[in-house]
Length: 376
Image (cartoon, rainbow, N blue to C red; front, side, top):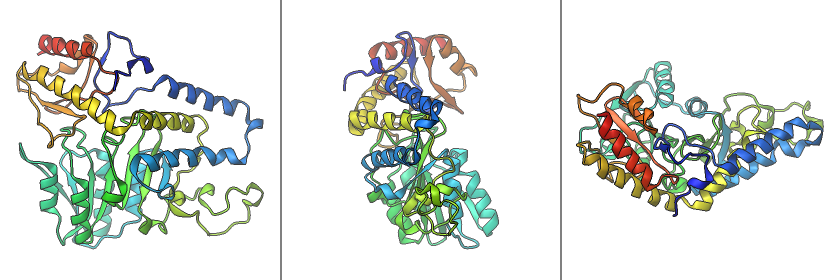
């Protein structure tokens, strides 16, 4: 791919290497959001179909992105919402274990602590040592005592990548459910929902999918389609398209994962922006995006290595992530020092997290090297 910077409102003197924090919006996504918001300014032009058609279109795009089925998707506002749905619909035995990774993102931890307390089970936190992959750690931990394996595809701090196909196979062998948060990978790393066969998979749109905040998806395996939603949304009932019959109350839920859709899912401003963002990701192609970012992280790793900072190599780390170990002598305000030089990265504990995307050019990498050298 060529550099795609021209599609973003990104000044040439900005080196934005922090997509794992928040992905920027393209001009097309911004325009779609403005167009969507304008629909609410003229509500007399809206009809019943407008409450459903946007959602159907973006679920169809997710089919292509994840190798999944449209009926397996629900619209959600956040990772925590999707995890709450998963927790509500998974039963665990007393004394069993819920597996999570050390320093996992909180939205995929707190819900399992609560679930464990309510079920007299416990959360087992897994750690890895240098040079060890997260896949190895998780596979070793899954056993007859495991009830739920709650993971990410890529660890949000160290960038460690997991083989979810292998993990899913072992989880099913022991009757354990697999629950995933793909927020730090989907859109930059290929994912095959059919091959992984997770029970519940959650993703927020505002990072690697380059979409708006407050939107996301829940993918629900067919074996859980008869589950209970988190809330009683009118649109999650069978026949909700018939506005004249909404007060013919009944208990029949919508088919498939639509029963898990959030309330007010018909967000007239944000859903068109989501659609535009997903369309752009698919137009680029996730394989192409991944290859482009891999080249950037390799160049950034070489630049950092010349200054004595190193991270792990593939396949232990994901190709779109570079997480550098910081020495004890690194200044506490390193991230702020870099920001003053228009270099934007994240510091997470003793790691400097660097996550470029398709807008990055050679000048950004040179700026990063010069700013890092001046800031250490």
